[in-house]
Image (cartoon, rainbow, N blue to C red; front, side, top):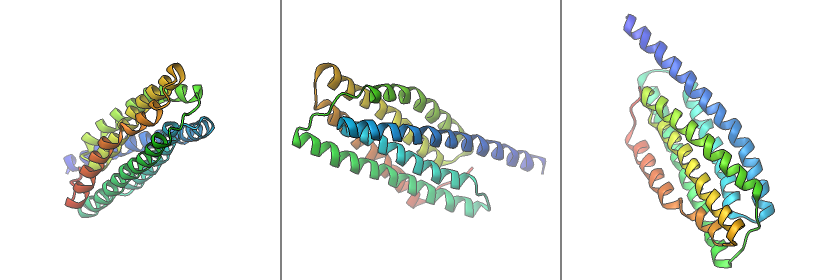
Length: 212
């Protein structure tokens, strides 16, 4: 009985930690998304606008996890919520991949040269610092909880960190060397990896998940 109570208390503590991380991510991503879309629209940067929309997807995914974490019940109910949350997070991977492919591919075909965005470069640097910290912390909590949905969301946050790097590279090459194609090309680098991870998460959501 004592062990069961202790296990429940531990799980409650982990849920609170996970919720704090998700709330932090939402707060940062709202600000990040507004700045990125505004700066990207002004500079004509597909990578920067895509980065801003990725922030919106991150907020959506975090909202799903917040819903998941704030509700508890029987083991069967927990597993069902976990499955639904994982499936919804998987869909956000596909949405992001579709947008990047469409916009970046079109920019390359039309040979659209974006303007320089120093605000975008500074934002990419900031996100390159913040996102790995949040992603790795969420993954740690996900492993302790046994939550595959939270682990998938943590991976999406880490993908955002990698996207920050590709964004920084593309914007810098365009600003410093005039390589216009580096902007849409940097946006396309992520697509294969995003689709792969989305597909893995989707398959697992169809097969069912375990809950800690």
